[in-house]
Amino acid sequence: MSNARRIEWQLAAPDAELTTLRAGDAVELSGRVLTLRDASAARLAHALTRQGELPVSLEHRIMYAVGPSPAKPGQVIGSAGPTTTARMARYLPALFAAGVRAIIGKGELHGADAEAFTQSGVLYLAAIGGLGALLAKQIREAHVVAYPELGPEALFELELTAFPAVVIIDRHGHNLHDIARMQWRTEP
Image (cartoon, rainbow, N blue to C red):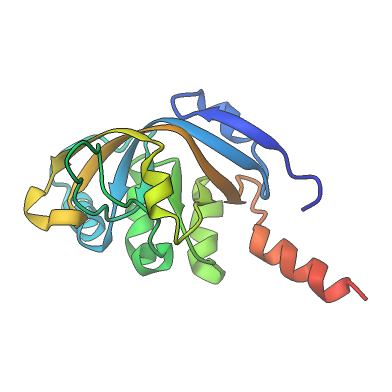
């Protein structure tokens, strides 16, 4: 973890750039993401398993596990802190097969949940929970692209600018939580 790097990452960057990111890297994300919550994840996965039409392409997309609160007057979006990724884990393989290349969320992933990321070559990034109001300041645009009836669980497209996150699972299968656990066990 002491070798962590700070990287600015333009989300529209070529796919090969994702391979250079390592577990523990601090990144500042700029570009467009789709949101992901339990209900929208279920709908997207259901559409994919039934070969239904998606409301938006998931090819080369980054998804942020968040259910933003409504914007107050003058705001782009309300509080927008990450939600627990593991709750949506059962839907992720279908989303990965549709082209999603990274998930931003919070919480540890292990076993089959973490393996789904590694096998698909998808990055898992964490944003810091409890900072929803501050993270919202890094969102320049927000609009619903599908499932408006789901309220905060609707599918939004967000424009991020210098949004802070940490790479947890990289494309080489390294998991920052496992690395940290191993280091803590070996320290005197």
